Length: 427
Image: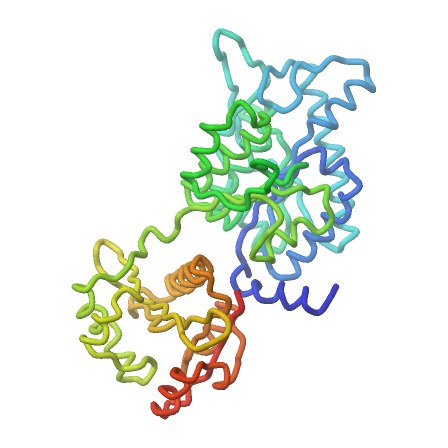
């Protein structure tokens, strides 16, 4: 690994540490030559204290077993009718895969546990047809899974569910991964498939909002493979129910998992929840409230003093975080002139004391970073006298020098006498 690659990964460690990632690995990926590389990538994630839950499919293995035993399965992916013979094939295939996963994770010095955390009930009769042993997820034992994660273990969840009488049902792994990610309020649900997601006119579509993903499904349903529609639809629901990001990557490609997580561009398709709904542009009438909000921080010399007039004149540069129509956070983005590259300053980042330690500051910081990218900004600066550790640990900023400031901003910096640390982040 290059030093630049390692530095790139380390920029994300504070953001992802102790967060839950649910990996839904397609059976074709488990049968591919990249299987062991994927397990190494999972080991990298665990080394960074990212909590992993591993859900897997088994349709490829069910098909292979059926051919080996000269049987005809009634269904392969747990979305159609599962007769008794096919259920037995699914149990055999799932057990074999679980063993291979335990074996492979052991080889990378990771500890894992095969779980029975999925309670299922029969899918029942659909359109007049009995689905027999096809099941639907009724409940996820989140407390049990959380206890395993707290012990540093990787829970492995097969595409099987169990009812209160000990009966086993075949369940679709996409549906299982969705329910698990919702129950654990996972930071990410990652579908590790054999495709990079959705390609539009030959170009990889990198990101979808929930609304854009729904529109894409509606407009292109006839041309999207059923397996991909499943992942998109489950991704939309996950984001609507608390999961921040859903990714679809090609797990047969080496380093795809790490490249998707630890780079701004990624390599697959991402569906994201609109977590900035509470953030809006500041209005002129908000100026007084913002000044009142930051007053104590200004007195403590944490933030630059501002007048109401100067705030109103530049109100278009500010954003506020609102809860129940109360402003509890603010941040600004000022484009700096006089530099060969597009440079902007993140300023006036503040969250009310009674709302601290809830991730609001990080959301405001990420929001400004995204706004800067949309505006073609190449470098984001932040000046701080007391919160520089927060910017470096939570935001991935690096310490620079005052020489990075354009002439006009440097003059203000020198005149203030605050001697703030100059931090920067290249976008």
